[in-house]
Structures are given as C-alpha cells and as structure tokens.
Image: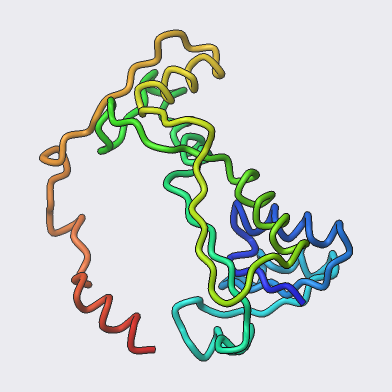
Length: 188
C-alpha cells in the first residue's frame, strides 16, 4: 500500500493518478473529502484528516513502521498561474519577492514523476528527504517575461510590491498571533 499525503493538491493528484494507472494500491490523505472523492472513485482508499494532527496521521499509517519519502522543492512553477488574472487585467505581474533574485522553480508534474519513480521502485527506507530542483534557476523578472510571452503580452513588467505598501488596518488584521498558532497546531 502506498499512502499519498496532500493527494488532492497539485503534486499529490498527479502522483496518485500515475500510481493508480500503474495498478498500485493507494491510500490518499487530505483535509477535503470532496476533493479526495474523485480519487476514491478511481480506486484509491480515502482517508480524511489533517497532516498536523498526529491522531489523523496514525489513521494513515503507523509512523514508526513506515518508510516515508519527503520531496522538497523551492517553488512551484504553477504559482505563476495564480497571477494570470492580474496580468490580464493590469498588464503587470508582481509580488513581494525581489525581481532579480534567481531561485529554483520546478513543475509539479516533475515532482510527482520523481515520487512515482521512487514509490514504484520502493528504493527508499526509513524517513528519506530529497530536494528537487527544476532545470534552472530563474528570477521573477525572467518568469514574468516568459509568462507574458506565453499569454501574448510582450515585455510584461514585474513589480516588487513594497512591504510598506501593505498597511495594517483594523479591517485587514486578523487576531491569531504566530506563537499562538504554533502552540495550538503543534499541541494536537
């Protein structure tokens, strides 16, 4: 049995689809029964729970006896797609990331494929962590130009949003402080 955490997400759904296509027994784990249901209809065993809740994780597998593969990536190329509405409406892309900072970007399908290769070969034991990097480091300025070209918008500008541009107001401020969030989340 192969268990996939976050099975309804960008990487997990691609990985689960590949494993099911290969005829593997797959248990999918995630927070949303609605998003996991299509995977269940394709033959996966569905477990609904929260990955930061140890009791929920125990429903997935006994942590002490399981071989666990964690793949870590810096930034998903799919993150660029969230900017498409802004790009189309405002003819610019932007975020708080410095525009000229080059970092590894990877497509989630590449992460899913690497995970599938490892899981199908069962070539890891214990708790294994592997870092995955896309084929090259790119800056947000470069990624924005590529996004613009793909959308037919030549020379699409990238704008670094200044931190001071985010004003804290009573209406925009939520109550939970970082320390309280961590204490609550990690005490489960």
